[in-house]
Image (cartoon, rainbow, N blue to C red; front, top):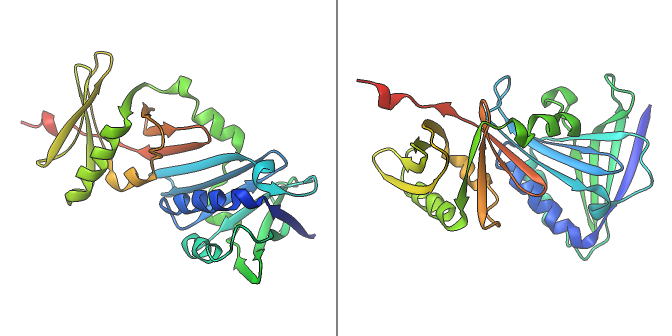
Length: 259
């Protein structure tokens, strides 16, 4: 059964919606949205069986979109999302903006509609986009996300002051190394790039650790808060704020143990 659903965008929230989509494109060029009556879950991920990076936003649907009550959850996979976002940037938030999804029933779940195409209309401009296929991206729902990212399951954490974080970003932009080191020695936390710089950023409980992660994802971290908390799980770092989560895969670095 074919199905169409139409949303009216809350004008003052359009720019914020575009900014969130743009931030997700820094992870990967494919974005998935799941829209139901309560929320819009949007996310992007890098990696297949091994997830290297993941970022999501979970926002209140009524703050961004107006529609009739939704009978289904609407899954939307936006391929070539960087170009999609650039096209949307030509729409003015002062225009009346609508989003129409052309959908079909999901073969796996009768409560879900899979989007086949997207039309965004603002003023005189129409942006028409062919949606990606459902198998192109792993499906993650709100419940699974909440369980996996529960802070009760983290192993340890440290907090980074905003100015220290900004300094780390500037220092890392100077050097060609792709890796940021997190070294914890008797509770003293130091971030560094090998043979370039190191910055002591805090002190936690007495522990030792040596971790590395890809510094390209520093630009995916929200720096609008005075402190940024890095939570260490079994295989990933979680940076969490009011309505977003950023997961970064890390490796344990034992190079200092070599003789």
